[in-house]
Image (cartoon, rainbow, N blue to C red; front, side, top):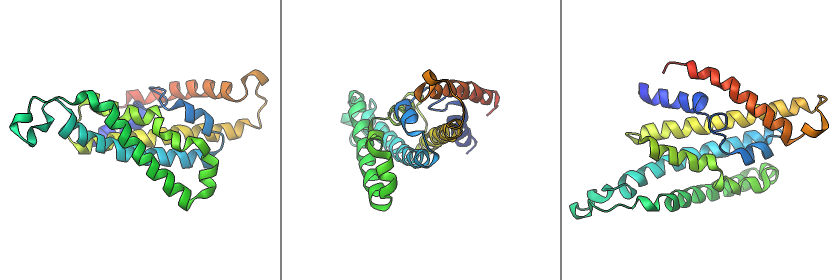
Length: 205
């Protein structure tokens, strides 16, 4: 339980997808103009990540890893399907994103219209794929650890985009130099926020 809590906290503050690895920057920059849309996309990304990473963990453990199929038959112990990881992970992510898109369109048409093309583009958000690849690389011992990592990473991305949206709403009233308006000042703020989040590296977990 302590290890799961450690993974969860680290993935939010220390290994933040945006501020530590700069994953998911395209939608992070484009959708962080208002808190409302940032909140909606952040929740959607968190949900997708919380579902896809544990599913991909199970597929990796029981289908894709070298020797993973030995539970079917001892004769399959030498089979290695790890070369299919990218294709399988992307297929799972795309399926879950399609489900989220249909749910948002059904229950919140206004948010669906505000998010526009960036909602289906969650399927190619590198933060989502990065979550599954980090899960595979770090070799978590059970699905609980993978789920804690997924949920923490999603919340970390959601926190980053909402914080940026709140700041961008405020700086609309500031006298930002013309060449830096828009994406320019957003990149500068992202760098400063990344430096600020480095203080969490001192947390002993």
